[in-house]
Image (cartoon, rainbow, N blue to C red; front, top):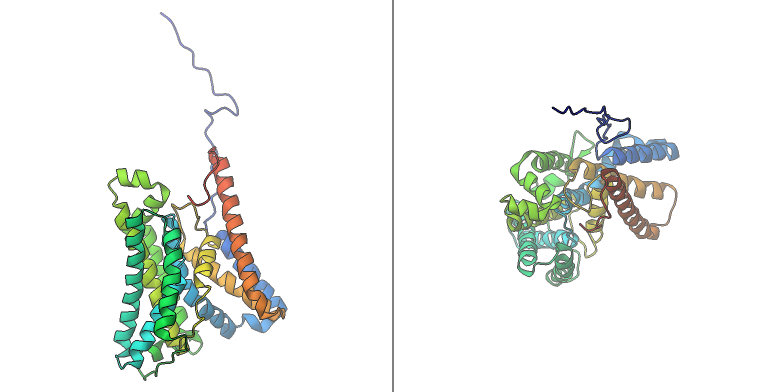
Length: 344
């Protein structure tokens, strides 16, 4: 009879139970950045952080922030939609023309949102039919939609007449004297879409497809359907933002929303959504958009020429990409994995 002795685990060996690690929320970096930017603004000009100016900051972040909410779902699915800004402009132009033609503003607003969802559906169907990444498909549809918007709007500013009690007048108002209605819509939708992403079957499927499309398909998840629905959601959010812009500003100009898609991508990445897919944070995207707007406000307070705003936006995009890349490399190193692909 033989006896097998079991040696005690050696210190530092693989048998040792790992200690509990503290894992910070994905939004932590964005929240710290926002606090730092608000502190800087308060130091530069104390009046810039009073209630009225903070409400203005929320209002400025609301429209591109709506696109950022939709972009979180797209990025979580390991895709990118470059056409969102063009969809925003076309839906606003389409809604304005319907109101000018005499349609009820509420019906025109619904038609504008539906048009945005329809454009998202076209993007999704092209992605499925061509078997190409959404990045490439929406690069083409971006130009197409932008050109169509200029054609139907004739390259002019369209200012439809607003009527008391209409959706246009409602969206241009304020609640509690200083809180913009657009900001309230932004925050409420952000909370709702946070629940959708993390507490519904659709949100689970989006994350599963982004984590591992092949495994998701083997698990019975209709990956093509999820891709299409996610791009439809992105189009609907862009359409809603276009309608809100028309109501809040009272007009749509040819250059409006030109940088919204890039701002949305940047805000989502700053807020903790990774380009490699699988997880995202709607709340983080909201904070990320507030960070971007706070940076632009700080530039104004510092007297930086407005023409440098485009440069600053591009620099922030590059910085966000670099941070996302470094975070992925750090996570892979901790997990013991090899080199990852930036675009999934």
